[in-house]
Length: 366
Image (tube, rainbow, N blue to C red; front, side, top):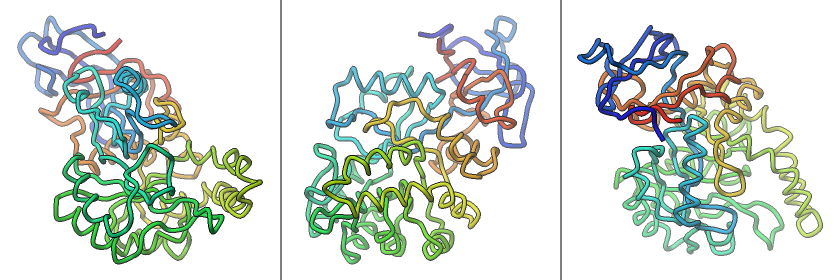
């Protein structure tokens, strides 16, 4: 599982990307923590060479979940291992019905920031995923998940309404405002799944902190996001599935299918417009529902394809993402969670697809 114990000294040499422009020649790892001073025992250190980045962030995935619902511990472990092998060492779990707290005791698995279980309207989300409740129960369930999570709560902001035959907002403005206020009172941030346009203004004006997917952003709502500092996690590798979803629903819900295709067609323009307006953008894959885990490099490449500069796309899974989630990068005394590459990922983000070494809690993995 690892080449050395965390109690031994590790020496990372080459180019250490402490920040986008803060590049150092080396760091040391002692007892699983980062140091920039030569420590006792340095002569016997295990050496790793290359370009080092903070452990990557997948800010939208689901450990313990597949397309049927909750999975067992063995499957959850394989999901976490797939992320680890891809260099994703910090995961924001954006909703899962499974209890994955046992992962916190495993020093060989990524660190997880949980958002509890999804909160949705009855028959307005994927079966077996969410607490399915009515609006008058929203505040209570948000409070419950705020206490169960790691500083986040996840709402389902819109979904197909079968009576309308299209995506519609799930929550009345008054209830969602009260629920977000309650989450904030309890010290949790709130995010919401949103594909379409209709729910965004109410959610942002209600005080929401983040929107997942955000394909429904328009020139009317992008300035509001920028003004309020509401982040987006576009999950472009998931949005790529929209055409096949639309094809599958064409016969029964033609209006919804056409809407999904439009959202897909403008996805890159939407993300670039949000970025250009100053909306914070972070990397997330939506792995664990239908998509496989370990796609973080693909999502970074998608952000670059959308027109986000490579360095900012890299920060969206590294320095910037960790700062947003309140977790350390490669500073003195921080846990030694880092990924080493053969080449400079700032020059070409495709380098992320081939980690040379993964170091987690000071252990060299593989």
